Image (cartoon, rainbow, N blue to C red; front, side):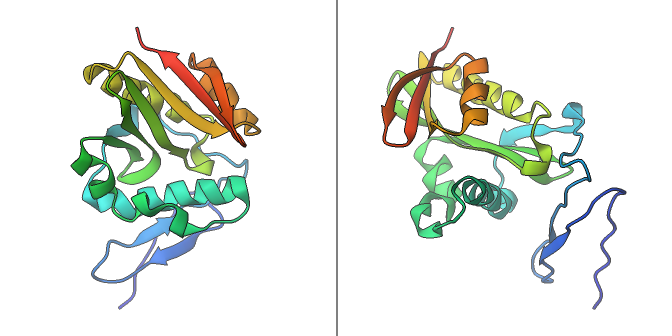
Length: 190
């Protein structure tokens, strides 16, 4: 059996991840020549993760970690092996942003304590960065935090990831502590 894949103009570096009949063919989307893809934000659907999106969300997070750290030990990320059990089944929120059923960003909200939510697993696919997706995603996670009655949210990131730290500061987060290479940031919800 042959599988035909049609790519939109401008895509390069395409790699087939799966072409099994029992699975939906999954393509790792290449980058446009300038390194990012324009995204029509009106077409981005941010919603709770669906079962069919688990593998794409896991891949997205792990690729982001590998990009930042230069290596990846998947055994350090067991929550991604079963996102439903790790998040939704425990009452947490795991959101994805998708375009044409393709996961382009994700993030989760877990309870830190009864008044504080913790944002984890924020990731935007490299070709989709600088299009406002992270802002839409974190805004959605903050709305979920308010719905749950949290008065503040916190997160951790690596202190020398200046793009991430700068992004969170632009969204109203302030550095409240350091733990090794990590910086802890928090925001009061209004």
